[in-house]
Length: 346
Image (tube, rainbow, N blue to C red; front, side, top):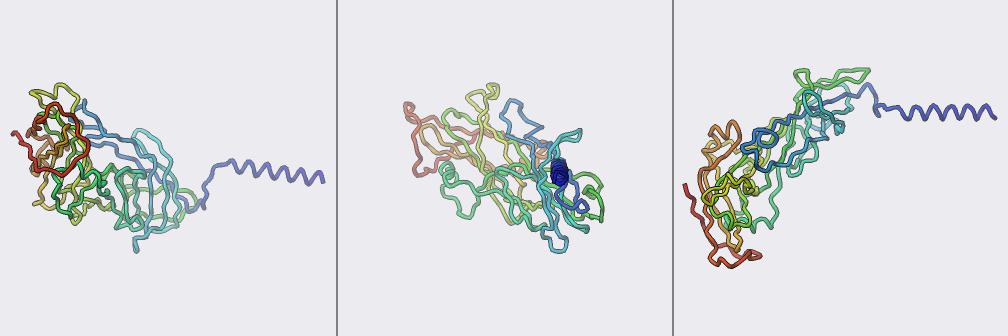
């Protein structure tokens, strides 16, 4: 009896030791290591700032990547895993982990998880995975005098935050009796780059002290992009909404002029060369007036500042008239919009 108890204790000890050993939860012959580097060289977000004194966009390095393998004949998901390991070396930040898949040929797609405004759809189909942003909340229309009589067909959406993507159309997985490493067509680790560009926009305003809010709308933008080829949807036009900041730099103010600016994200402008790009600046004043100014910036996107730095620097000056009743304060709520157009000084 004592010998039986001794054997039982020894067996429990061996099981306990084995339970503390870290090992894949799948068949080692079908387990593959994946590492995805993240290209964080993002103009106007992590580098290439127009004005170092301006407020910078919020940014955090992704810590989770989804990697999916697709059947090349059907385009459907054959296996997927979220890479939760993270690290940094001389090449930069990366996420890594393991995925299980049988030997064969696959299409591979990987992208970061946890974006704030960028949304994905049709994630189970390789050729159709698409990134987009949602329409703005209904209450925000109260701050858009330029859209008081807008066409209902116009989609006004949030600007996207950065989505890092990589993939390849053919990944061959041979039969192995050990854990191998999945690599791209060049035999290297994967490197995910953003499908979103961040543009810096600024304009000067005279009488900005009379404004309580300032927002902008940019037309002619693509509302979504297909992940596997980074192609924008030409049949999905959208108008991007973003809020403006006022400069705190006193050197940016002269003759009662204040620079207002923002950094916004976009999947890209629509590919049609006749596409017209307009930016509308909408203001609510401290006495409750609604003012707007619209500027054509089509040519700005082809200027060196926009092409090389993604800067849109407007020379025009918007003027906000002084309140009629100088003793009045902010008027809560906004009624029907009056068609009040402010002068643009060039």
